[in-house]
View: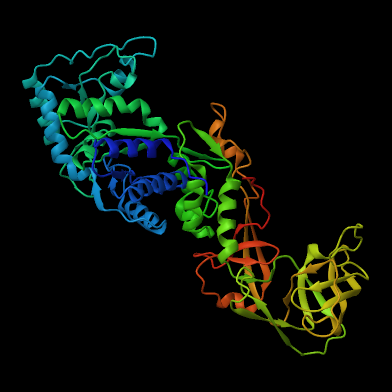
Length: 545
């Protein structure tokens, strides 16, 4: 077997272990609890937890809860549920708010070193004075306050003496630095709002760039793995750690996951939810982990997807079909099979005795031929798919047609002898005769080119089926021109509900806990909210590995 090559993060870790730079690996997954996790987060989860598992290390779950206005325990709970559903368990559960006292003390250390100051400029003034890539910024008129004045003002900020937006604490670095983030970045801002964990204790809250590296350092994180957009933040991450002289955690970046026909922005997803474009964060069309779970995706398929996407240093767009390939590959091995008719038309067996029922054995999963069987009732009146009958069929149409024969799966060969139509020309009823000698395993075997699925009209269960398509019609939603409203590309056919569908009775007894295959149609999963069956994906593979 060909040895699998290492990705660049694995190469770094193996080199660090070999050199003795670190004795054990510690990673962390640091979500902000201001929304639900999506498939991009799933990749990060698999990477952080997977690397730690591979090299005998540990992974912390740390909530980056530094903005009380946007955060909620609802999101905390959902994030923990999603991680565990994916099959991972954190070593420790931490919060950035656990470190607020230490972060505050370190801020005072930087003030005393002359490396931080309180700025009275407004947010707009700070933005205007930051400069551009080609022009240096303008130093704040408050930049050279004394250490004593800065300490006094910062302590009064903490005590709640000043209103929101009136003052901030900034690091004192270089207003002409080519990296814009080094132009005296904000460390603290005033927010008079209750925090979901600390209540009203604090009215100043640390900024991400100040809190993140220090939190990693407190936890002795050896490999802080972030997505690529944070690469410009890494020098600032290192600067704070160096100036404070604390444990030297280090940040590494990998390409974020972009998926076709969807959006990954929390802001946009929140807008879709709040304005009713989708049925909540767990709408099966959403790229959220809870949406994928509700639709019927398995954790195994998402982990396989993350593995196939791999770890890159450059952003790219992944075809949604790869995700569908992964769940199809997983379910093909494990899913139980049943027959269901989504767009039914009645079929009557004219030479079948009225009221007679014959039960046929059918395998629950052909991938396990020696496994259990289910019992399928054959009766005089059936339902078949409307698309499986054609009045004027082309030459290579091998389904049912006038005077044509097909096998009703697992049972007899039937021949169409007549059909009825309504005033609009729509087929309403098909009449057939069955060949009693064509029963599988008995009589005289003969083959026909077409085999179709079916459901007994008298012994089937009525179900609702939710057919899903891409949420957006545009493939590359992340590359829309400036000023274009992404909602203009919402697909009006992304959900079609079919209410009068029929399935063999054993479907409702299925306790497998995963999606089932509707034979010839695709994989379907019972919706946790409305009880209908969500189409996970079809049987046809459109992705080429």
